[in-house]
Image 1 (spheres, one colour):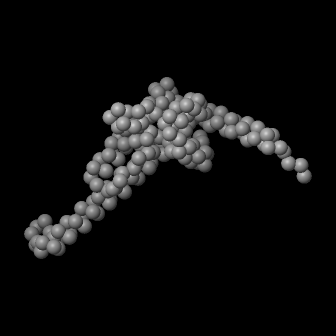
Image 2 (cartoon, one colour):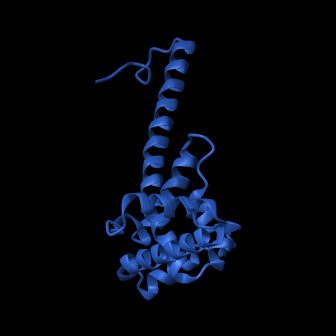
Image 3 (tube, one colour):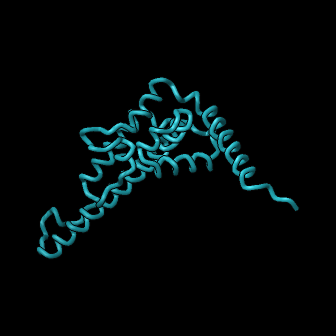
Length: 173
């Protein structure tokens, strides 16, 4: 058995990667209108109000379950809805490819993505945007449940420790 040399193997892997990138771009090209491409590129620009890029902001989760955290995640959700991230149909890409591209998007910094060519950068950002819409919605629901449970627990403890029997401590329903 004769094995190919390292250089030959690297060339074949490089060729396969380039073909995969071209195919990926071709499958999502219909989603990349001029306006959407600009919106994707704007995710990489540092927002002075956030002191970070929108991409970094979207990837930063809440520290604790609180009403402020819920509000922050809802703000992200509204931002994503404004970009129609929830409506992106990436079914033309295999699920494993979408997962891989979103993982690359999470791993790379905004600057590193900015340095990539548009035909490589935009599919990554599209998949990351679509995945972020799902992740942030899940986060909002989870945070809301945790915040509500925490408030209910504090109310029960307050009623028990204060021996209150007023209408606010009586169980209804």
